[in-house]
Length: 326
Length: 236
Image (cartoon, rainbow over all chains, first blue to last red; front, side, top):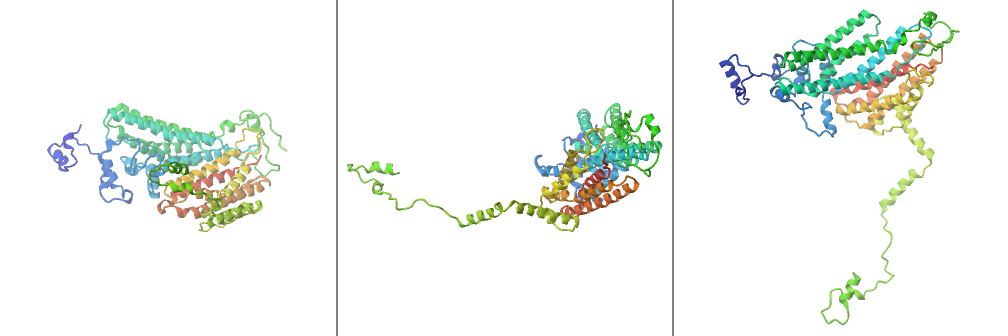
């Protein structure tokens, strides 16, 4: 471990002299190579937050409270308290989304983009958009499968939206809670340099789900190869964002535990993504696998024929009755 | 006081005269009035004003409210940057529109329970909870619009989509087909754009300038979902 006596913040010379005296001495330096610009007048995204950055860089390991960045400590029953979680501008949200789409090795999403200003706007609205994207593409893919079938009755399957919403919001909130608890527990055993607050973890998870929105929309394409490629790309990008974020938090730990943590994070993410995307295919249950007898009676005629729709009771596996076409 | 004054005033005591001795001789006659009415000029004027709307006929009251609602409908149909909707907000219009939309969107029959169309309550809840969520979002982002003003604006701007629903219902009476679908798609897209533009015209000024997109996006999502429900509506 570091020579704690040498780390006195009042005297700037000590670290340099100790390093000069003993080049092998390990000093705890918090910042990663990409963080040194924080002391320079940098891009506007860091403006106004330099003092927070210095605080974050200096007592990173002390950040064990549940909520991050309490710049204004309003009591939790006032409205202003919750406004601190929405203190983001448009360009900041876009930067964070861009950071989740383009994971650069070595750059930590939390350090680079969140910078002790976690917001709840991104996670909440990205999850909401994802829920509706899945619902709409599930509907559309089901509709496209049955395009041209005369006896198909379109149903919007409205109730599945609430199931999808529950699953996605539970994932976006409960998994960060479990992960945060686990990291806090490990922090008490092993001195970790980097620790994240609960809101920062929620933020990372929320923004990492953004890649699934275009994936869900493109999943309408009924080609299997296209779908597999899409899910691989999406999982690769968001999994790597998560892995690169949490690796610095566990790398000080026992090697096996660190690896197990990262693997669990990626596995859970894979479970969610596969579950979401498969639900698009099976949006109406197994309804689209028609009864073989009925299938032979269906024609591929388009809507040009006379008569209207003939409604078939949607039972899914066996069709008890069907009206004969006029 | 009178009784206490009488006791020290006992005749026969040769002590120096007590303070209130003379009071026992005073008698109150009935001529001096000690009660009456206090009239304050302002109070009677206010009571007069209350009477003027309390005593009006029911038809006047309803017509006044209906005219206010109708005026706001006109403002939505021809959106300008005005704050009439914001100044005198009311929730009658949103209620009428929401009930109309939910009545038309609900699934027709209850015998086929696999029919996954929305129920009345689902549409109602989506509209109102969606509006509340957007309002909370814009307030949390720092907008200076009040809660009910924002609900009022969002509710009134559903009017174009309700018109789209009516048109779609009429179009669906004709024969089904791709042309039918294209007509409905066109109508819904136009009305959706109209709703978003109308609500942005009213809401955009209340947001801080560097967060306008953040506040408008949920409105876009909200009207998109309602448009989707309208477009995918099929009668049985």
